[in-house]
Amino acid sequence: LLQHKECEEVREDGDEASDPRCAAWKPAFEAAPAHRLPDCGDVRVVHMEHLDGSFAKLFEKFYRDGLFTSLYRDIWGPVFFGTKAAWTIIGIYGGLELLFMKVLPGKMINGPETINQNVPVYKANGQLAYVLTLFLYVVCSDLCIGLYPAGILYVYLGEILGALNFFSMMLVLVLYFKGHYAPSDSDVLTRESFIADYYWGVELYPKILGWHVKQFTNARFGMMAWPILLISYAARQYEIYGAVSDSMMVSVFLQFIYVSTFFYYEEGYFFTMDIQHDRAGFYLCWGCLVWVPCVYTSPAMYLVHHPNHLGPVLSGGLVALGLFCFWMKTNMNRQRYNVRDSDCKCTIWGKPPKVIRAKYTSMRGEVKESVLLVCGWWGIACHFHYVGEILGAFCWSWPALFDNFLPYFYVAVLIALLVHRANRDDIRCAAKYGKYWKEYRKAVPYKIVPYVF
Image (cartoon, rainbow, N blue to C red; front, side, top):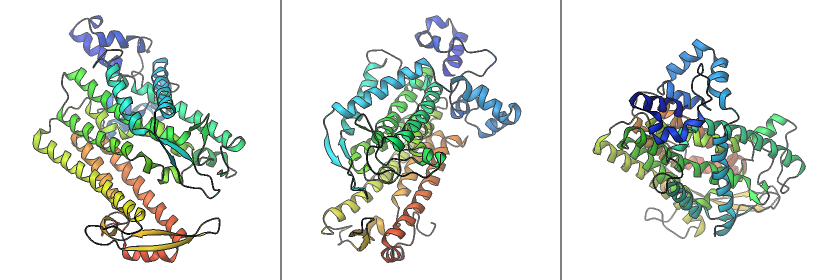
């Protein structure tokens, strides 16, 4: 898609052969039929490149050409199975991350014990893998030694998403049969429905050839791809316009801080709902392999061809607000960790913590106790850190301004996801803690936003 469009632009100004970018990318689009839109692998790519990020234009196309014709002929059909270039990029990147998981040094971390007394063990070397991945991508690109253009991922984005979509569906199918016939441990849940098992997953902690599947798909592929794509988007804007706009800088900087924080606290991720409760099925694996690279990066993706000028005041304000949101979210999690780690022998905002010691019975019949914090950030709302998550995402989407809704699609999806997650958590904790949870909800009546929800 992008090679065809941008090399046509070069051709208007001079011979395309004189432009090394087009010479390098030319083979990818030479065979594209002239009657089609240039190839793309996702509705979002067509939306960005040909429809200016406008939902109105997208729906107009669906109405004019027909929904299924548009999807099959112009969007999914051409690159549904990816291309050789896309598979090469994915293979090199995925193989590198798998290698890093094994060979890089890191502390061994015991995950949460399951009801069947299984304890997953992870090597927490995400910080080193994160730094090395970004270093290698930048150094090997034309920003340094020149093995490929730094904007190459944006150029092949549609084809990459098509390949990832196909790969993720096949991986989930493999995990379905593995869970039924060769599970890694006893934490298996079947539902007597292929669709349900395929979508939600069968195994809680599947391993293939010694690699933890969810650690790879969630952290080392999906989250690791996020910052690499941001670099590619910023580089592509520079290649097109000769400069990187302050709007792109703000958006990319805030997202980099967010992802860097994730890898800094990677050990804590092994104890989140994604890892502890969600099984390795389409919902989780496809979401991390396809949804994260496509949707989470979409504000910066939009900015490639919309280089807005924000000015120092707005840029500084967005960065300051975004950094505060990330600090608040991290500090809130730190409060809970400190209270539990010290058995309440610490202070929250200069005062002894207020807690509810909630007893519960495990599925093995053992009586255990959890500490529910009802002060500090946790006294404002059950999941007040979600406010920081949403506002932070809004800050890195704002640089796209408000001409189109598309850059804010991620924020809208994030709100829906976190509201759903808060409700799931409330139901799960009510069943787990019983009367103690009622006491907690009386002390902290709001789930996310005080006096709103």
